[in-house]
Length: 417
Image (cartoon, rainbow, N blue to C red; front, side):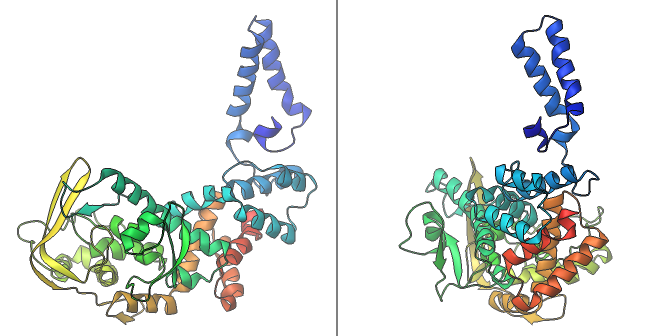
């Protein structure tokens, strides 16, 4: 019961489970089956299925609740002996001890049980990734499968590295390094990287993507639709996850804008969106998010960099393999746009410059709100948002270093009260 409930158990709490075991034995049930039934009832009980809250009136329960919350958040499992001993000694409200335990768990390889689900939920990177080739016949299905997994892992491992090394939040958008394995190196055109293990790689100066999650092929591919780039999805995703300014849900009565329809075929993205914005129900939101999406026009259906686009694209699919290629004349890419604050950009690089200069605070506010949601299981309250604002004010001079931000939240009243 103590292992299942993640805290000391009082004799009075044990009585009903022991009584159940004795009752079943009295009905001639075997030792194994009676014990199994008692175990099952423990695992069906509230203290196993629900986490106790740090605000519990019982100080012992409250201490063990902090241990559980910290452990489940950072390594995805019940607290170990170290945390249980500290909880038993009543030390888990001491900021220095909380910091030390957070550091220990973040550095533990098991912390991938935190980073993978957290980054997947925060950035919604569980969406389909398309690996498209020039010809269906020449594709290796195994290569595509491993590449997709590597593209998803790239973003998770990049964010983990930011936290492990306590890098400034700006490097979420702009950096001179990346995390790659051999299959991603082949995809991005880097040589001399062997083996499936991810490692830190210095970005080539001639790599137009630059460092940061916005140039990750997996993110850009999952934000494509109907066989081509789609600035609406990319703009909405950026507002939601980078600018912490989510657009409202679109009206149900607005029809989809399908680029491959006969009347739309061959039109540029800007022509299509101008047509879409003529609907009064659409224009309010689209005038704000569509100009952001143009920043990513250099990324094709598979998240690869491109310098031109075709008037039309041919898309065929067979057994999970996608054939996709341009047809007809090429034309320059339209990558000019504007951010909600009025800052204009003419290229992907300029867009990242503007975001890194003016919107890192928005990015971190959104990230901290997601830390609260993941770590406590609830959306931030007004009090939580005030705490986040205080932490950000304190950490601004050090450029919102990632590990420091996470630890500041963990030792705050949001997490331990």
